[in-house]
Length: 474
Image (cartoon, rainbow, N blue to C red; front, top):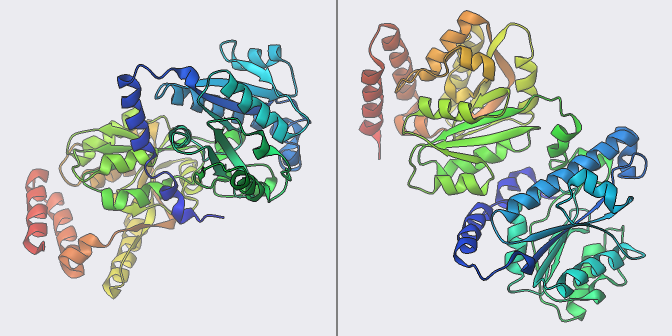
């Protein structure tokens, strides 16, 4: 099974691919949607007859509800793809009739029954029908793979320009996607369906038939209760528990391509979470990193407080987390956020701070931050502040200062309720301490806080801070 540290790598290049395909669609009017066919295999969500292996964990109705939501998500994803590239969609179903399927999914969506005695015959028949109907590239998918997105589907169609077969390997030894550019019924014959050797036998069949093939990213499908506990399976948490409050993680950026990918990867495991990157005019490829990771990308001014406020305006979540681009959220961060903000009287929360680096003085800084956060209830922005959206609006958002904006937001929050530090640590880059030196960086931080309390204008403090950094910059 792939490790969580590779999560961001799995989506590298997908946003750029979608953008390229969108441009191609606009320029090339000769390509018709019927030449690319996407086939969605699903089952009518009848309790007790669908996702039966999940019934011990979810119950018959819960398993059927998950099947329904999985299918609806897959249809929505396919429709997003169709807005980026010419592709036609059809649903191949079992467990009901066309009338009930179209009542569920809409009459504009072609719904046809699956035909065949086993899965191989049903897939071969659906793909063969699409290619006989004029499609030059046909791709078939299931509904139970949370990591499958429109960009990966676009990549599958793109690869069929050069290969006869494209396969999306599943971590259980099967595959979640198969695409063909010419009929190949032999590809589906003699396969031990339902075992961990499906992909292995399919690749052997492709080689025997002389079919060129390529593999997409390996993803986790969700068939058993154990799958629900995997990193990808937890992405269905919002589906299984739709009452879980949504979280929007807002990341202001300016030339953060080196660190942003890891920060976004730390966001992804959360349940019912969206990532919003608000870029202030980066020139190092930061927007591309955000798009490839699937984050919502906004353009904003070169001003961190305004970027955060802009992200909050666009957020769908009832809970907001403000994350620096060089900082990683801890495992289970979403549960900490919901737990802290669910307590009556809590106005704002933050995490404890860990700083990357081996310098022993960094451990001293960490202890000082822990004491300040818990004793004085004054966390800073690099601790990933989080707040309910309604409270954030009532506080007026971040004050639009060039410096000390996070400090002032926390001060306002303390006047309305408790400021709580969660018992988990974010990991932030040690680059600032390394550049300035730990003692110097610490003195500068405390000096700026003191000057702020003495009434020194934030604009002057910002100039001092920039000058201090330039004085020791390599």
